[in-house]
Image (cartoon, rainbow, N blue to C red; front, side, top):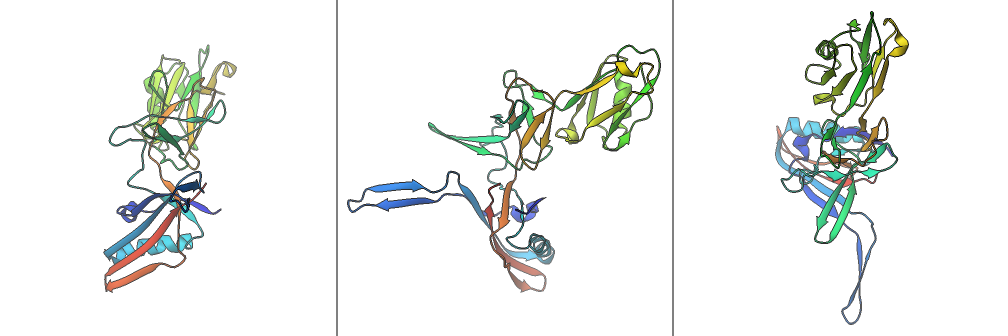
Length: 295
């Protein structure tokens, strides 16, 4: 099934009318009693994007997006402004993830009404918004690495992130020096990584800010140290697959984390023909149906 990891522009999704729908067969007997049968195990959401008196520029954006998706053919991401985060009302809520293996966990959101709860699998989280927490302490778990140099008396090492490599970092460098070298890379940037530890290590490198949910690996070159075999780099946390909502730990954490996040809905256009009206030379109106996809 063709799916493009691109979101319909928020200026077009805002104001859409719709929400979850279900398929229920209702059988009414002669006495008026009912038998109700659910045909779907999960609800399916549907919206109508309908606007009047919009600019030609806005219409052009929608037309280009519709043409690129080829009508109903290709799926895409959609922000449901009525339900797009882990919040319940205005309260930020940590939701338990679903354990897949000892190192992989699926994001999900739980809805509760009285004694009834419903769990919704979150497949299209928004990168950079996902935060994982230890279920016992409530402390956030951030993607991080440990650099251990071992016994060294001379030499230097390099760190590489997203194909960019630092200059020489001395074997006895302070944590602040390592942080400056790492955040000096344009692939990292100021404010997106912290380094703690003693001079000469071990160093703990934590990605934050724009790299909070990074799936890119940090690597190290220890060949210029006095004793390269004493040095090591190990990942100690997790990464996010934003196309599936699966969080993967480098090693089994020994617990099932909770999470906060924002998310999109996987959808497609539910028509192969756009209905767009030209109200004036520079004014357009349109109505386009969108339906949720099972992924």
